[in-house]
Length: 314
Image (cartoon, rainbow, N blue to C red):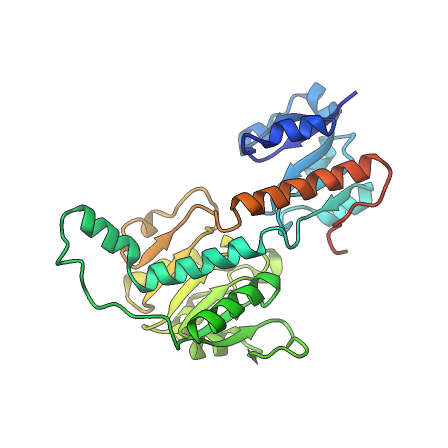
C-alpha cells in the first residue's frame, strides 16, 4: 500500500520515480485553483504534503485533509505554513535548511554583477547589432560596500563571496548581533542602507519581515545604491521599488522573488534599471537533489515511526 502525497510544485523529471520507489503516490495541485478544489475522495487519502514556503498550507487547508500527518517544505522557508495549526493537529512539519545555500549565494552575486555591469542590456544591444553603442562605461563591484539584511547561512555565504572575491566591506542587519562575527553590525536597516552601496535582502519571509525594505529604506540607499532580493518577495515593497527606479532614486535593482509571484507588477516590465529572474536562485542540479533527497528522508523517517531529520523550529 503506497502513501498518498499531495505535491504543490512541479517536480523535475527524475524525481517522481524516486518518490514512487520510496512508497509514495504523487497527486499534484500546483495552482491555487487546483488546491482549492481537491476532490473529497482524494482529500481523504492524502497523508503527506510537499510544498514550498511561499505557497505553504493554511489551517483551513489542513482541515480539508483529515488524514494528513506530515507537511514537508522542500526549501528552507516555511512562512506560509500555519505551524501553530499543524502542531495543534499533531501534524509534523519539516523544511530544508542548508540544501541550497551555495546556489542562492551564487545567484545573488550573479544578480549583483548583472545589474551593476548592465549585462542584460548589453547582451540585447549586441544582438541588435549595436556593438559600439553598447560599449558604455559601467560601474564595478570591487571595493564597494555590501549590506546584508539577514545574516543567516545564506547571508554569510554571500558575505564571504563579496569580501573574498571582490574585496568588499560587509555590514549586516539582524534582530541582534552575531557573536564573533567579523562584519559590522547595524541595529537599524535604514542605517545599513545609508552605509551600503548594495543592499542584499536574505532574511526569511513571514509577518515579521513584511515590506521590511520600504520607501524609506530605498531612499536611504540612495541614487548610487543597488537593491538585490533573493529572499522572499514579501520582504520588499514592490510599489516603492518601482517608484524608486522610475525616479532614479536608486541606481538599480535585481529581484529573484516578487510579492504575488508568478504575477509581475506591470510597472516593473519597462524598467531598464531592473533585472528579474523567476525565483531560481535556489535551483541548481546539486541544490534540487539535496532538497528532494532530504524531503524523502523526512517522509521515510516519519512513516517508519522515527523522528524527522529537520523539523521546523517551534
